[in-house]
Length: 393
Length: 215
Image (tube, rainbow over all chains, first blue to last red):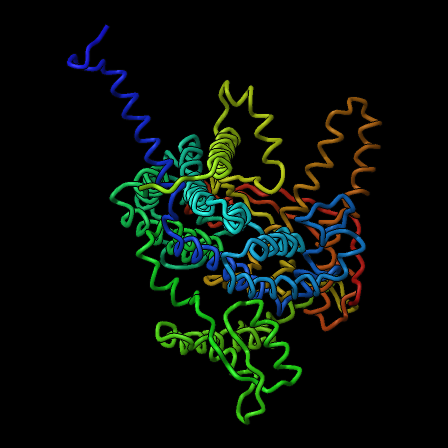
């Protein structure tokens, strides 16, 4: 029998240490939210990613979403909440589904902590994806999962409002789930690659750039050089296999920097922009609380802004939206000069922190709209191919 | 002093943590390579991840899918026939998918997926007849599957694209078109100086032309 003065057996000491560590983790995860700003920003980034890629499809709605479009899939009656839009009696109302998706997206951006809106947005986004399932890729898969985790986290935090202190626990676990999920993406992709012969003999990228994935660029040509292809293959393997370990260590920023570089290269070699953006945006989950506080406060100011609007129908709509967004307190007025458009301006300029962003939003919106109109009209695109020469039959 | 936490909160916290661990254990089982544990618990993981939490992170692994599949069409007009071309080069938004450094409209996936779906549909239908041993029955099976193939959803999409492309490049004078689905593999490294654009190529050809349908 051991006395207190005798040294503890090694195994017992190790187990005690492990138990204390796990208890410490449990306390850290359950007692206080570790990075609320990162969680909110991640959710907003996912919503923006969905909105942008959906809005970018709007000029070609007849190809992507219409029942007679090139991408049309057969309707089916065995539908769940995620593909409800494919029910034969509902499929024809796809414009309403897209409009609802956009509206819910905007409200979710304004209320990222809500238990209802992120979940509604998740289902709306899944239904819009189901209109054209061919467009989904690994990036969509990751964004969908992260959105689900974040939405469920908000739902699980609801008892907090009834006085049961579980909000921090639910939201921390949500953020941890996002981190683990991202890590699993890289770990699995890396491990699967090691089992393939083309990656280990260094020729995978040589073959990828030969296929129709590749973008015509100097980078693509460079990857056709065997030595460079070999080094690039092993760099990809090293990055994907080491990311899960580096990102939880003191080399976190280095891992994230490598990740950004890796995905920027994917954009310029394979042209998978949406996928690369999804992966890069997901890195917000690894940001520490203080790193995102400034941006989070700018985007999600807690104090409502008071504005004056004339009591017209438009003002009523703005008031309704503002109430949904929880950001503006609208005071009816008959004073000249107060117009519904001012609401958006005030929303953007409501603090010093976001004022400098207003010109950026304006330029982006202007360029985006011009680009969409130009592309719809066929401007700026390569001239249409001339009719092929006719050959006698 | 740490504030007292109610029993409900404690129970809920433990439940949340257990759900987190359980979920990621099942994710691990779903994604891990074949091993005895996956053999036992794999079906449970697959069942759990059948819906909203389904995931697949192959991302160009174990070996990248290096084959390319595309449609090839030539249009018949009263004056003659055009040369073979890819109809997707002549249809917005698919045409501009070639210039896709910033492919925010995601036409690339649609452009790639359409011919690939046609090819995989053909493979799926063809596989049904490989099990038939009797020669006559197999011939009958092939004829039956060919009819199914032509009316399948991927083929109807390919026909819509071909029809639209023929109308576009012949100013609506095309009356019919011939269609081929071509599946190619890239040249091996040892064949890199070969002037051919790709290595091996397989084709699905149709004996009869298709009629152009005006929009």
